[in-house]
Length: 509
Image 1: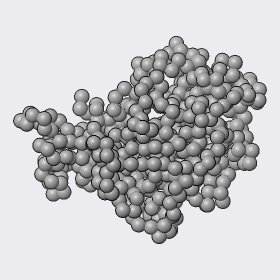
Image 2: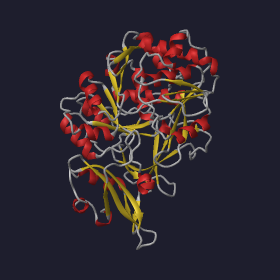
Image 3: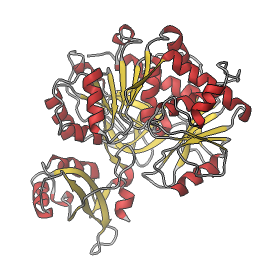
Image 4: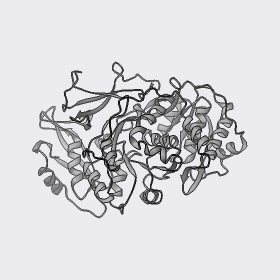
């Protein structure tokens, strides 16, 4: 199996746009972006970034913010890197957020420039662009066409200067702005490279591709975008992450070296014709049902590579190198269901409730430390404990050093003193042939003070049928009695984030 690499330090202290500059210098005519079948070369992409930076520069000073609220499109990447070349920070925000939440973020960050499809705030100079309008006549492209190709000479301190602010917390509550430095982000790209493709990456540098099926305003898709820039790959940008025809079309036409997807997408793809695919199928941002991983590998003939990360960690901290090794035809154990091992220079510990370190195989909260750890939250208290970041996830590590996520700490259900992990129940529900989506929560037990009952919300596959009683019986055959859902509610839809993570707090409301 591929050997573990404990350290690849020192990491270069370079700005985030360095990857693009190097790729444009070495592979100017290679395709940098494919979007809605339109393409840009690396030299064209760098030229657009430099010209936009020139146009932005008269309005920006070092440390200012540019708020970008765009769905997947080249303009998002161009605007981000242009802001960084001015010494500013890019605030990436989902355009699907409610207008009130967008306004709240603008009020918190006070951007000097806002790039988006429609004006929603009085903050900043508004630059309008439509994602599908590549090289069109809107504000965005007009600035590029009318500006000089020489970018401003901004001073950047990669270790201290904040490159990107990403707001997270939509699943748990009030969103917090995560401040990631240039060094956080470039380091995290480099931490994963030794394992993702190994030596094969250099052979296809400037000629391969990466499929960005996940939203690139999210930390996971954003990471995949910059991995592609480092390799001078063709960034296959999916315009709509829920358009499975587009995703599968890219996979079959281009055979991308890496696909950056989320569990919900793979759950949809296994219902389609996926035989013969060739791509390292990376899954992140939410737990991957083991049944989905097994079915995908059975049909496509390739494993899904599960990983783990948080917005606060730039985002990647773990990757399942056993799955990568099996994809490459190397001898490796089947570690399906594991998030893998920590990426180089990342320390991980499992702690008990009293703060002491857990034994091998013992469950506890996972805590992380490494160079990819965020600078802090925007105008909010840091969560660190002596330099360690508590993840809020219950996990354990096996004898081979592979980590497994058991559940979120807050999602654990107390049934008369028994610990019920919601993810364990969800895994069983996903095994039911009629169940497409499942979310398990704890609700108060009216008969026992301080105790909870297990409730499940499920969405069935289109055309499938199953009653709550039938699903309960399915669970009884596979779970201990106290873990079987007392209530099962079948819904037409379940509330989800852009990365298809189920919003349990909305279900509880």
